[in-house]
Length: 269
Ligand code: T3D
Image (cartoon, rainbow, N blue to C red):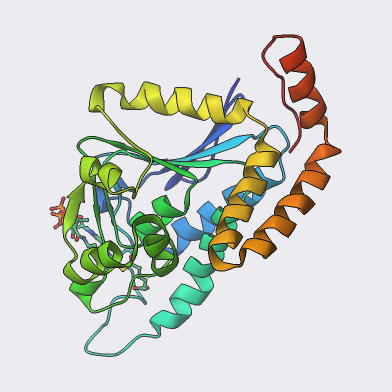
């Protein structure tokens, strides 16, 4: 079943079966993010988090770009007449809650990067669990070019994904790297030929949605916490998660499906 809602014309919200697709839709501004689009994204994610029928969220975009980051032409953000703006306020109000919402979704998330992902646009993609990009897409840490630091979680995700040396190189130099290079250095999960991109995204999203999504969301949480903590803390957190999941439907179903040599039908959220 296909269901289309548009909270704002700038964000298309479409559900196909268990997959919710959010499409940034400001192609003329390279899908750059303004306050309205960020608010729409947050509320679409909040809604998806509360809908048991949604088992995977795909973040994609229209046109030739994925997202050029903050809309630098948005009133109240761009400096006007030499007057300084409180960008910390924009980050606190808009980007921080969006990043936390995305990273704590109860279902797997995937960024389908169709073109250039710059600044906070790249940061958003990198907060998703899997990042799949067209071979012709690219990534740029655009912040240093305008005298800012990486935000929307990029100072947290980048060193975790690619290590400090590469994180410093990319953020200092602001070089645009190809999707192929991004895949090689472990910044993203996969780079896919342009012609196969749309069908790969659909197939991968359906695959994720059919997995035990509650266990996947826990796995993400454990991996994120594990990078910051001790082995002992990870072992304890794993035991706690297994305790919870072991009482769930999906574990029973997974073991039964294994014994009966059939595909599992997972349902927990
Ligand atoms: O609130 C705060 O500011 C704090 C939060 C910060 C978070 C951030 O994301 S900071 C980083 C903001 N983003 C950037 O600095 C990226 C700026 N854009 C670019 O570097 C390049 O446009 C791209 C690498 C993304 C793409 O390059 P290219 O050559 O493919 O396209 P282009 O010709 O540069 O841009 C095409 C049009 O999109 C152009 O408009 P025009 O001249 O045709 O009318 C350009 O101005 C517009 N555009 C591109 N990026 C933005 C944008 N308009 C508004 N905001 C943008 N970020």
